[in-house]
Amino acid sequence: MNRRRHSNRVPVAALVRWVVVAFFLCAAGLSYVYFKNQMQTTGNDIRSLEGELATLQTEDEAARAQIDRLSSQNYLERRLAEGFIQLTPIRDECIVRLHAKAGTSATADNDTELQPVSNRITAQ
Image (cartoon, rainbow, N blue to C red; front, top):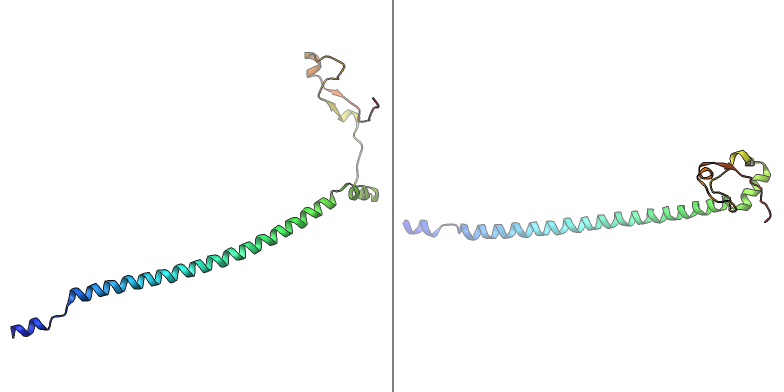
């Protein structure tokens, strides 16, 4: 009877080794599938963001073109002629000279003093 009991033993060490190998193979396979799915999802996100960026760049170019058109001198002159833009001339008392005249020497009194100037073009 003693011999029979030893012959019916289950090889536990070999069974545990194959279970561990199978576990690592399953974990590696699941990790591979997870990372492939993550890469696919990230690629789709990048593709949609690139499309959105291209759309925004197109809208930006259109807005810049409209700004250029609306701020052109011809457009502003036409709007001024229509009366849409109201401009008032600059009054002489609103203009301030910050630098001394070319013909005079700069002294301490002239540097601190603010002087009104004309907005009319003078012939030289």
